[in-house]
Image (tube, rainbow, N blue to C red):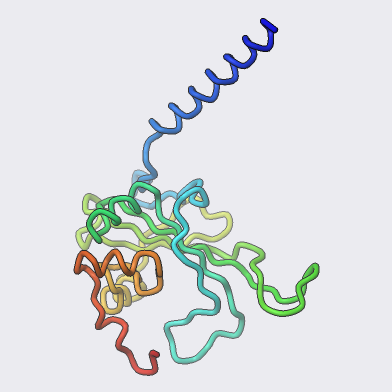
Length: 195
């Protein structure tokens, strides 16, 4: 009986130490190389999942192959957004791109996600970028990347994002938060052909 009690106390102590370590672990922040390349975010699948899309394209012509996009943001940035409807400095968005497949295992209709095709990263970081926001692309084995030219993602987000540079119009759990704090630009939904 004494051994069982000691073992139980050891398990409780170990769990307490793990929880304390998790609570004091540093928040997920952008990391850079000496020449200002962003390092690929690690463990982003442990972050808050915002939304998924299938075959989304911002051009009038559909692409040839539909991919899934999954959007993740660190827990600390998500919690700050919940309090103000704004993204705090150092916020990171990971847009994971995955291949889609219809036939596999027991599936007969619809689509499911498969292989990682790449990922885009959006970061708000005043100390590294004069425009605050920057965009990066990472391939499967890419460890670091330079910011994309403004003519691409930056300009599109500046012109069409509903909250700052983020497409909150596609994040159903955050849209009401932004509306509550009056940070939501509803005009960004009023485009030709939108329902």
